[in-house]
Image 1 (cartoon, rainbow, N blue to C red):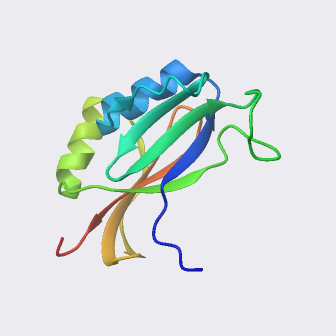
Image 2: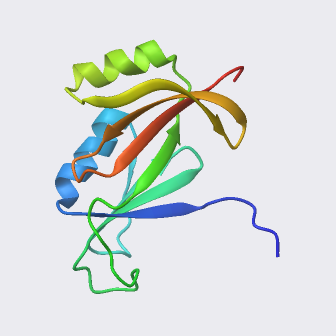
Length: 129
């Protein structure tokens, strides 16, 4: 079996509306209206989806869905300086970076922040991309 890519990830959040606003407004992720999944907010991130759910959701979930336990890397096209300026305009604190990292496609620069539930979000910009 050969995996091709990740289709979506699910983040467990404490407040669906607060997290929806954060990911939609700060990261400009379009909200996808998914009537088939009540209690879930779905956002588009490039060719993948990020789904937000509450820990007490009565559905097929991880054994122990936990708020604030994710560590996620998002790839951006903008220069790091522009990203830093954008985050500052939304009063989002950068907790580390820019730092050099090696990602799935090679060398990149990354900055780190927390979302409203304290998930660790890495924003990466690839060199030569």
